[in-house]
Image 1 (cartoon, rainbow, N blue to C red):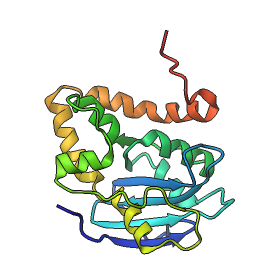
Image 2: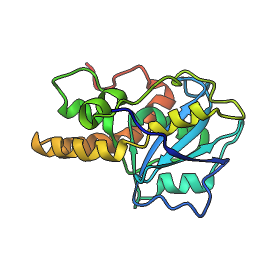
Image 3: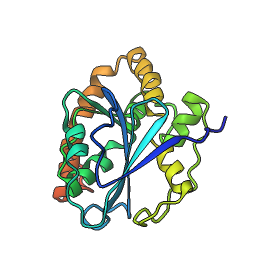
Length: 208
């Protein structure tokens, strides 16, 4: 089935103090490209799993977002990502935020969906949730001062299903006896992000 139009709130510069997202928050980012240090952070998407998405638009040359960073670093708040490695490094570089603790649905998928090499968000949503996530705005000018409605809805779609995916993947991790392995991988993501930023992005330091 296709996803319905999400409820989206847009904020500029930081997360408003009155927004309460709960103990488990889905997070995603949009940037001008995929190269840390060259391509700036433009947008951070957040959802508490209630079908509502909060978008935080980051201005050019903005270097901090105190309330957003506090949530990302809060040890009592679990942050959900799909491909956490990129987002964690991006927010570390551009906002100085050290994101933890976290859960990555892409890592979980690779640990339990070993019958396929398709671990994209759209693949997971289609198989595990029966939802067809549209990706039409994936390549888009996220640095624009005004985001289109299509951009906002696309950005929201990247976080609105992560809570449901986590529930399905957790059950598979338990079934296959890989929950502890997944937790260890999640705990290493922040270090992997630091290695990316320090110049080891294309190097497997565990290789011979």
